[in-house]
Amino acid sequence: MTKPVLLVRADGNQNDAEALAALGIESVIDPYISIEKATHAAGAVKLIAALANAAEHTWLIATSANAIRLFGEIIGIENLRNAVKNPNLRFAAVGESTAKALLEVGARMVLTPEVADSASLAEMLLEQPIGTAVIPSGQLAMKQLPNALEAAGWNLVTGVVYTTVPVATQPASVAGVTRGDYSAVIFRSPSAARSFLSFNSDAKIPMIAAGFTTAKVIEDAGLEVASIPLNPTPEAVALAVQKVINTNEV
Image (tube, rainbow, N blue to C red; front, side, top):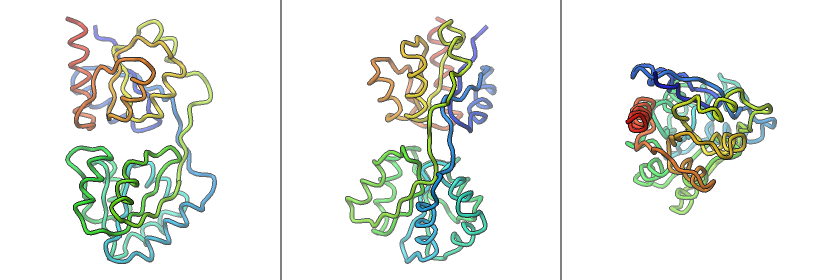
């Protein structure tokens, strides 16, 4: 019988679990990081003011569903919904699941790139007229997107609305990783990979990275990435996992 796949993100693991289950692959959820809303509201206040006063060609850009959810928690969900009604606003998201978070607060016609990563999102936005990018983010957010937009002359309004930290206590799955109880582990962020490796520095488990920046964390630690799916949707990642498992079982 195939061993289960380990899912380690802070939340949202159920989407991967369901996609794996559809292929007959079991999974175990054991977060290695936690996500909390920012303790200071300054970033959210700056962002909401930019939305409320948005001129033409102003974009609310979501790089994660957590950014939108926790932005709303800090500023008040109705305040965010009211700001999003500004007719000058346009909306973009890194992927479909993130776009859903924008739609839930009242966004209209959220644009997403064909490949769900920051580089593709930047390329898509650079095809638009130069404008203002309003980007709620975490304290560890990658700089590729804002740097690309700023270099092209865009005005940036950024603010930290959540923090990502390793879990405080050793995850229960660490012993199982050592024993070889899992057929693979899925990483969906550099922070999750870093935290996993801090507890499992010499892990001998196939590692699937949903993105090249996440893969680099693994490779920089001297470990091999088993697969980097071109599309990080749960279904595509599940298929990549299935291929890795089948290869290892041959």
